[in-house]
Image (cartoon, rainbow, N blue to C red; front, top):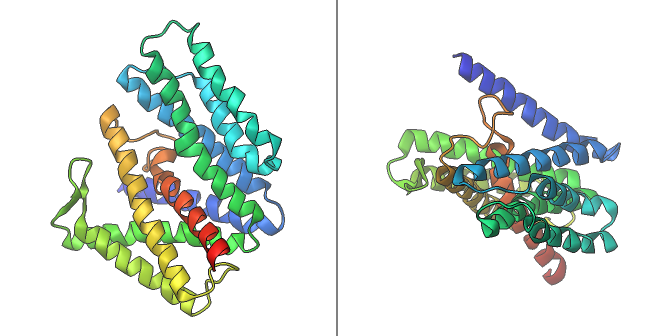
Length: 274
């Protein structure tokens, strides 16, 4: 009972922080940027820490600097700031020469992984948040779709799940849960789009919202499975302990890392072709 209470309270605080930072956009974008910069830092730290279980020795200072800098590029106005990432990347193999650690290739590769897996998707999210006219509705819709699908997939899977979706990686996820979560989530989001409760400059029809929801569900599930694969390979249950009852930042944002690039690409497609 105590664990359920802790998990519930942590979930409420986490959701409240995310939603508040998004809704505060009209006053200032700083709360959102600071919150997700913190998520970038913690996600990078957790990923590097897990990797040590595989006898890998990541370069924490440069890896964290790369991730945080990558996330901040949209806030700095991009331009020349984006190009500065390349000399920073080149520092990794140069510094590795003097570290005298085993598995040099893996050390450098894993040190780059958080920038690709964690920071760049969150940087794209920040870019949408800072530049899109209807960013508040768009970003809230993204999170609501992820949370809705997680909840509905869990409920359907608990009631009717018999066939594992990906037994080798996540035995508890079922085909029934995935399909049920997708059908219910896409239906709800499409109905909200039809009623014009959800409406943005680019997502203007129920069909737009239907494809939006499908992308978020599919790529969000893939993000969840990829993180489970990494944790299983590193033989850890949770990515961290910062969120009592939930694990780490990676455990809470895993669906976001794959769904944000998919949604960003979808919005670019709508901008260019429709």
